[in-house]
Image 1 (cartoon, helix red, strand yellow):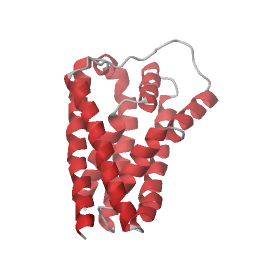
Image 2 (cartoon, one colour):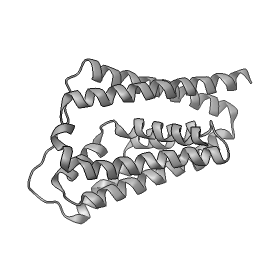
Image 3 (tube, one colour):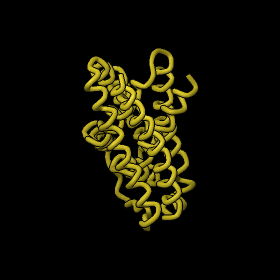
Amino acid sequence: MLEGYTNGLLMGLSLIVAIGAQNAYVLRQAIRREHHWLIAAICSLSDLGLILLGVMGLGALVEASPRVETAFYFFGALFLAQHAYRAGRDALLANQALTIDTGSQTAPRRGIVLNTLALSWLNPHAWLDTAVLLGTFALHYAGPARIAFTGGAVTASVSWFFGVTLLTALLSRWLTRPRVWRMINLGIAAVMLYVTWIFLDAGMALLRG
């Protein structure tokens, strides 16, 4: 169970930390201190829904067909390897920094809620990363171990959104430094390569029967 929880935590963090539209919005609003706790709660609950859909819904559908399950493992390995390559490339070659608009205009609460929901549920990458990849990886476990994996992924999501919201005000200048994001991207690449190997190993095991 500990292995399942740890892998769920690591994979959840590696998928969620990469800066995309949702995370950039979370960081921007946290720096502005504008409905930031509400946004963290909506993002966490949305991620919980996507994780459960992936593990319980998609996972069950994929598991019902060995051929589909095998295909998903190899597709996941390919996708994760691409993620690892991009993270490694950004860490070694790019001079990236997180740029956030901190304008003074305050958005209404209703607009904030709708925008956060749209970034969480209408984002194809969120569905692919959270529902498809986590749902497929969860097939590696059964029973209590799968529950532990799900718990690890949920812990990663809640820890990220609320942790970032809590710390961003104190670390906003630090978080915008290119060197920091090089280190983060190297960590993401390492975890992605580890998970890629697990996906490939699981797919090969199914092919061998």
